[in-house]
Length: 369
Image 1 (cartoon, rainbow, N blue to C red):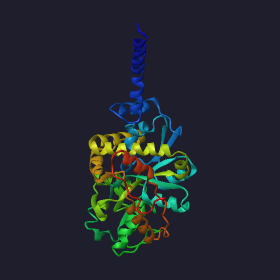
Image 2 (image 1 turned 90 degrees about the vertical axis):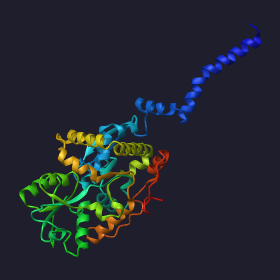
Image 3 (image 1 turned 45 degrees about the horizontal axis):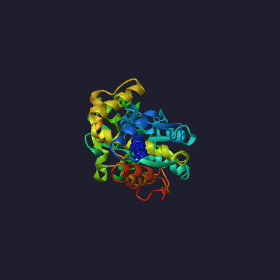
Image 4 (image 1 turned 90 degrees about the horizontal axis):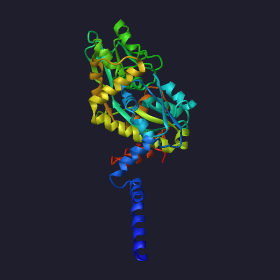
């Protein structure tokens, strides 16, 4: 074989051998149909981020369904790749904030009032809000035999989950706007505000010791299944019927040490919300199955079917409504005028949203920059 022919043949074989490497390199840069396959492969093989484990806290509430569904369906774990997801559930905001401050959890789903209180008490050093999760899902439900109109609440006993919690602040603000007086510390006044754990509120209603409750889902619909009537949906009090009920928070220490993990987690929450909104029936079943995993008992169809439609799942933290809620707490005497500048760091979320072709969200001037 002539030398020129052998040289040409060797070059051709080298080019063929190099072709898979070139295709792989292009796919790793995001080109071609192979890119998605490789992304799944990396996750399946356990791509390692900067932390071995991320510890997540959330409530066994339907307003935390992004966490319930994302955990149950494995969407959050898939986004984290080889970083293990460990979860802990809480029944009250203060205990979750304490766990975050103690380093027992790294990321949490939580309401706006505990987020504000945790940030203010730490003088802005403990947490950042890095994303939204849910809007709505809070109702005033009452005994229809005792209360027929909103004016009938005067002189009645109405439960909220906890002194200073998100629903407690909202109810106290509503009372003030009616021109009625209530002492925020004791709950005594023109309306008796009874602080009652959501787990015990249905029994309190059945016993007649309360006349109604301003509570989140599924507690509101549990009361309705026991004969209560929805008198007011809190979303009707807000512009565009939207207000933040659940934030995603992260410890500032964890965010500084592991920004890649936080970004990956947010990719998981964005994908989870997208799946929930595209598959509402399946998502409802998934959330209920996770509640059964956690408590040993699923919600009855009459409860979850009534509760689910009132909750909107969104990546937007609706920062302007958190600012308003802080103002309500100040007006109620539960909070001194806070400096909330820096409570949000939406940089990682907006990076994820932009990459997904979704609109970026606003921090309402309360961001770190």
